[in-house]
Image (cartoon, rainbow, N blue to C red; front, side, top):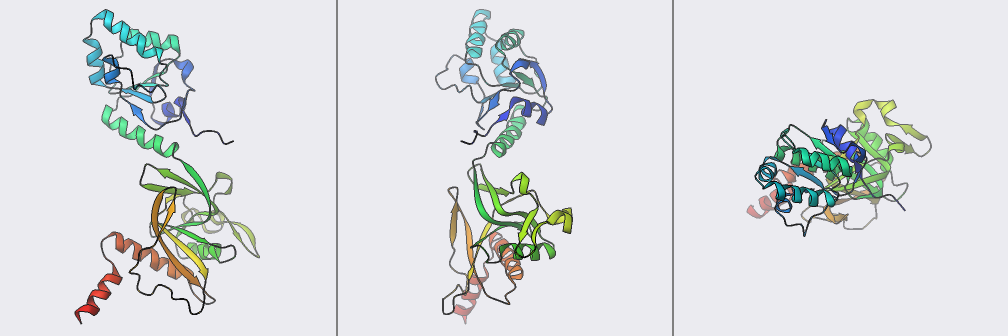
Length: 305
């Protein structure tokens, strides 16, 4: 069974160059959720929906509230706070941390880190980092290529020509992301990102030749570590008499990890320049995202005539 995705408090410490104030023994605590908690209402005494597995972010507001409490109430709230064993506490703006909180965190092994960045800004940075690192992941077969900044996922049955098309695209100045095995992460609720497994990164299989290293052969500019997945292209053998899309008025979608992305079907037959077709598909997709649809424009021109 695969281990649950996680990052360590140590990873956060290193990534954002934080200062550790207490609880160094908990620096290898595992963080498994991307949500962040600002424990304002909890410090006011309401603990019903407190989730200690979330990183706790404390700013000026929370500390001002704590400093205004009666000493006995303050001690009671801190004791209850640390009793839940929050995975990590980060204090923003370089604020001075109450000594009693530092002492109790040290006793319990709860890491308290400090940053000089403002609370809102750091919250945004941390959330983006955690969503990327802890994003749900799936593995699919295909080829992922960056064409004019558009992440194009090439699908199709074995031997249809996916890898050969990718190499031709690389020769035309585009970048290979992954061949054969693609690890796809769902980042947030609206974005898919694809990359190659670390042990297969930049390698590509060509039948009759074998495994090649695209980075070694074509240079660092021919590869890319990861890419958003914007468009899916399914290659399939040309069937004579089949009514393939001619105008492009109908939008087709494919679903990956609960998200729908645009998909087009490209029929394959000898002599067809697939790399050129995919370049045009990527450029046409970009024009659609900018609000221009050539098929609709063409149809409207015909209707006007």
